[in-house]
Length: 293
Image (cartoon, rainbow, N blue to C red):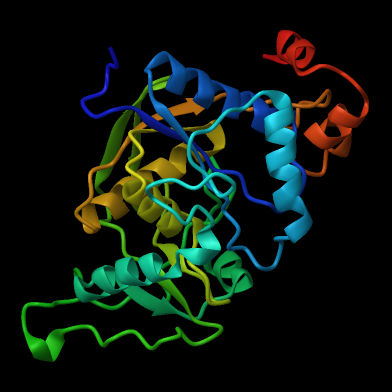
């Protein structure tokens, strides 16, 4: 019997911006094992909205390499399912609906700051992600946009959002965002200290990871998100988005990251450890699991 109130639904959510590596496989394997242990469903979602890095060739390779490694999902872009489409590039209407909800409730504001502007203005980088905390340059004055009266209601979003303008989510300064990670235990991050106002719609016209992830996990009824420990801080941001959108967050299980021989975490630049290269070398997936998992 599953420990979850609803039937367990987990997911694999790779981005086709390069060949998947052994670190992805280890995290995804944990997701599959947890889905199987709970008698649940595993969903494959193709997170293909980053037009600056996405390449079509990586989509087919992603599915081939995952199947070769031994992954077996029940819903996805190659097999369909009740919550299709499973390509994020086909789900923009859902992201825009969520963006309009955030606008109507006064949670977002336009921002024209570049990354350089933020680096120059921020006092210190964030310790966990080594990113500067947004200093609030474009943030509206007051506690939050007032939406009680028509005169103070935020203006409707321009469709599409103008280029070179991003939309940021206004965090509740000083609030502690707490959650129980199923692997790392209790976690707590303070809004304004550990992270600042974050982008939900990018200046190049696409939804940011935080928004797309929340919208899709909720729409696909994911009950547990299994992913790498580098996204622990993102969980705090996403919990705020779930609350703002009046959605129930899933549970979370974060996995330790796999590192190379120098102690750096694996990235898609590690071609020698890509599933495609390992597959071409003739090594069997079960031997890789025995050695690295």
